[in-house]
Image (cartoon, rainbow, N blue to C red; front, side, top):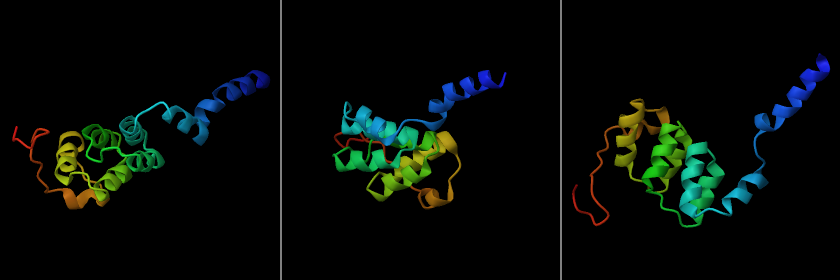
Length: 123
């Protein structure tokens, strides 16, 4: 009985540990900077967020902001804001999905987001 349990334990070991840094970056090599940013925001991977922004990813990516907030990766949300992301959009998303402001994002609570298209025209 113990022997079978140990085999089961070994079979899920890789799932519990997760991928290595090397495996993560190997997968990222196939992706664009924007794809890396969005996935990193979703998974809470700060190093990927920083690297994607260094590679030229758009800090105002709506998908990145939504993924960081929806998955409660507020440290990444704060990092995006510190690097130029639209505060009003983050406040809009927080109100829409979460309705709670973590302490590090309390300062954007009353920010307004102006809805404009890519040319600056009001929607």
